[in-house]
Each structure stands twice: as C-alpha cells, then as structure tokens.
Image (cartoon, rainbow, N blue to C red; front, side, top):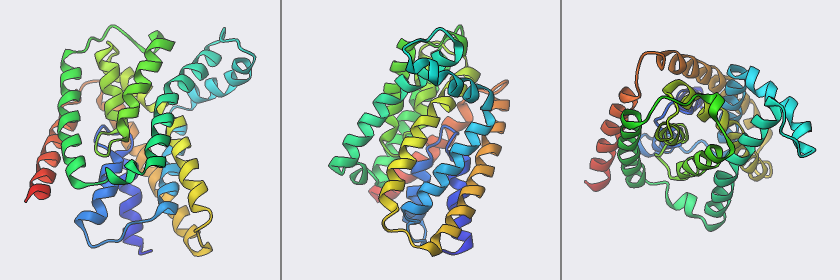
Length: 267
C-alpha cells in the first residue's frame, strides 16, 4: 500500500474519530472522491486500534479506575467509583453493539455506505448538534452520570452507525440535551467510545484474520501509530478548546460538507 495512501487513511481516522464530524464518513469518502482504492479491513482494524490506544492514554486516570472496578462489578457490587464507572460504560455500550450486529448480519451497514446517506446525515445531525448545544443546560457534570443517562446516551450512540452521523457528535448531542456541560459531554462521549471501538475492532479483526497476508502487517503497524498520534492531537485540541469555544465550528463544517456531498450525489 503506498505510504501516502496509508498516511491519509491513518491521519483522517485519527483526527476525525473524536471530533463531531464522523470519521467513518471521511474514510468512506476517501476512495469515492479520489482515485485511491479502498484501504481494506486490515487497515481499518489498525487505525481503530490506534485511536483506541490514544483515547485510553488521554483518559488513563478514568480508564484505570474502571479497569480496577471490574472485579468488584463481577461480584455484583457497584459501591466503588471504579465499579460504578465500569457498569455505566458497559450499559452505554449495549445498544450500539446490538444494533451494529443487526446491521452487519443484514448487510445494511454496507448498503448505507453512500455519498447520499453521508450527505444527509452530515447535514441533519450537524443541525441537531447545534440545537442541543444552544438549548441544552450546563447543570450536569460527569459526576452526575447515572445508569439511566448512560442507557439513554447508549441509544444516541447507536444512531452513529448511520454513516456520516459521527459517534462522538451524536453522543455529545444526547448529553447536551440532558443538561451535561460541553466539556463533560465530550469526556463522557470519549469514554463511551472505548468499548465501542474495541468491539468494532474485534469484529473487523476476526473477519480480516483469515484474509490478511504477512506483507500488510507492516502497513497496519504504521497506520496504527499514525492514527494514534493524530487522535491524541485532535483530543487534546478539542478538549482544550471546549473550555471557551462551542461546537458551532464543527457544525458549520458539517453543513458545508453535507451540502457539497448532496450536490455531488444529486448531480
């Protein structure tokens, strides 16, 4: 695989995975709008692993807490902060995993990978993000996250399986509608991404393990490292900007890209 192609796939995935602009849409559009071939499942798995490592590094304090709480959760107790966080992340992941399996088994996940679907999703869910950001309250923080909110946000996250929606964007939208402030809406969305990205990576990995040749493993390693670096950069920048900037710049980008894609789709 050409190094430039590898670089583009990894950086696009890394930069857009945690921004509310849809990483899957950009990866689908890359071969559709250029002469480049589809990168294949092995590279998809690699860039997913890279972004997974990035978010775990960035939120390691919270991740460590949840990991240490798993043994206690396994005994049915949630009386520690770690066990409670592990429970909430698990509950929030159920809808997207279940919906994802249904789409994958029915082939609808492939059927929806079109410029038309991506264009409409970019536009509609971008406007929904703007609405939630302007109308949503700021009285809740990550400390207020409870089982009911986790399950509701999990349903919001499942909508992201529509290409162009943005997993981060739709989860943040749900959190803002429920009154979580901008920074902690993003933080919860990022934490929720960990089991989701891991599940997606495992699914793709199991499928690709039977078709992968040794030669592509080197490309996969390079892609993972590049995606991890780009994701860490995007995460740091967004979380810092949210201290003073709204989600409006991302909404504007989504609307412009959505309109352009719809013009292309219907012309």
